[in-house]
Length: 236
Image 1: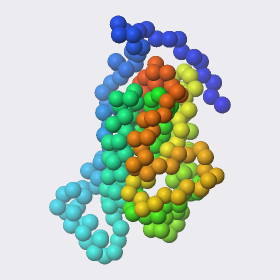
Image 2 (image 1 turned 30 degrees about the horizontal axis):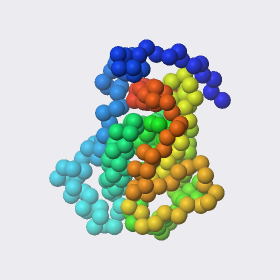
Image 3 (image 1 turned 45 degrees about the vertical axis):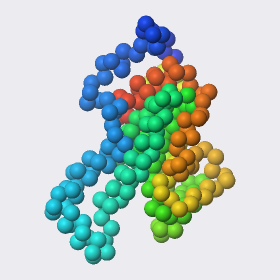
């Protein structure tokens, strides 16, 4: 259980919106708001040298030898995050904010954190690779992978960590709901007993914008201010 102390209402500007000094004085290096979808994956690909001539030759050779370069997985994951990120950015006009590529201790990454009238959502994005996807209560199986993947557990766990961080930083209870999005899957079947993780295809993402009634605009803005601060996530 996390004990929090309610913060007093902040000052308001001339247009009536809440004034949050933390947003004004956040150092640029600590501000996650400019992050592009897949920012961390972009950095990994850039650091791998895969874009250079020698890197491309290495990848071609690995594929010819029947190996599966990790860079190929990163590229597929990046394309999936870009697809979902673009859809989430399109919700901005409805009072929603999104922070992309939040790195948690232990190398876990929240692909997208969506905040708005319908609440806060920790969105994990996975490439579907034209596979038939079966989502169980804790694992995901596809017809392209031999072993089940712990995507449901990971989404649930990362959302719980985000809830703790944001509750501590905001001074009021913040519940981050886990969402798992499969991009490019042939089909997605969800076990009926899975009721705490929302599972979507990429075409369903804009529908999140229709949710409402969970957060007052002032609280939504406060959560976004805290979420975009890189330093608050260091103790997630």
